[in-house]
Image 1: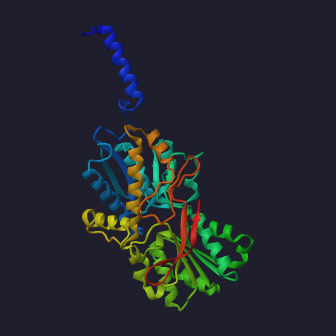
Image 2 (image 1 turned 60 degrees about the vertical axis):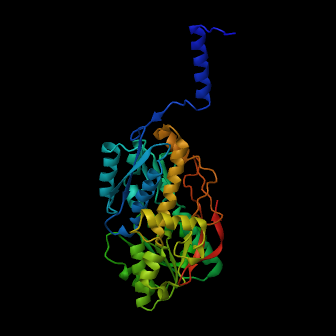
Image 3 (image 1 turned 90 degrees about the vertical axis):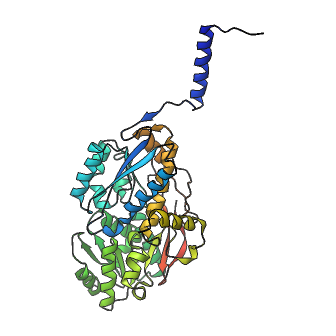
Amino acid sequence: MVTLVSSRQRRVLIAGLALALTANGAWAQKSYGPGVTDIEIKLGQTMPYSGPASGLSAQGQTDTAYFAKINEQGGINGRKVKLISLDDGYSPPKTVEQTRRLIEQEQVLALYHSLGTPTNSATYRYVNAQKVPHLFILSGAEKFRDPEHVPWTVPIVPALTSEAKAYARYIVEAAPQARIGVLYQNDDFGRDMLKGLKQGLGDKSMKMIVGEESYEISDPSVDSQIVSLHGAGADTLMLFAVPRFSAQALKKAAAIGWKPLRFVSAPSANVISVMKPVGTEITAGVMAVKFLKDAADPSWDSDPGMLEYRAFMKRYRPDGDPTDMENVYAYTAAQLMVRVLEQCGDNLTRDNLLRQALGIKNWEFPLLLPGIKMNTSVTRRAPIDQFQVVRFDGQRWVAVGGIIGE
């Protein structure tokens, strides 16, 4: 027996089916922000491909290579990622110019992984005024962890103050009579670390810190500052500096026969760009913090995540040094960005992208140190807020204590 269905009944049935499918997400409406089409997602970043921090620019090249890998595999939900990575020379005025180009001319969906405290400091208010996601920027400055005033900015790394407090705690426990000399970059990067050190030392800071010397990123060297800190009688040296100046400081201290207990900032804790060029006989004993597996450490050679990373580098970044931690940083950041974009589905608006970036719950990635997981929320901005104090033994970084942070 055949049951006849009227045209009106067919329309009702079709409407009901459409409603059911929409509720299940199968027919979810596509929503796109600037820089997004059915076939492309456009992102932008600024990197110091030239200038005093150019040693960090491998991150931009690896970001680009990782998205090339993703695109070769079909993209993200069928869309290819186009990353526009522009040189800012680590110069804030140039960063402003390039960031305006990315937002106003290139019409990117979001800014991703732009590098540097002084450079992001020059643009973050403008970016937030434009309501553009400013995601996983490479700076631990406190100003970028302010959801009330800069809700569109999300850093990726632990707070600079937290890192410096960890050093302070180590000194108080291991060398309570230390006389500390501090070299710091004269911007939010260096000043935040100095602030964290003093907070960590508490009421002991005035007695323990015997010298403070700053440098400008445009300075040719920090030799005179190191001589001054040595002359102040310091037996502990804090280098709140980018790799170029940390390397200079370590060399100069050795040249004048000064052998203090030394700490370098996380960006300078790089075996390839700092420790080995300075000389492992000089850098043995240097302290730092880590939250990623060290690709120069042979103890990770059989680690599945490291093997996968090395295979990626061989195929997509054959001109890059796989043991350079800048490549490890970028590889992990790119994996994070891909996962956030995947979470967006077909709702690739700026609002939803920010929402997904702030909804990370215990995400694990293969090159994070064991025990470190990524988490974010509206109030907890940086996905990586844990690390481990480490000491360089002349060949590799050795853990000192357990994981610190939330």
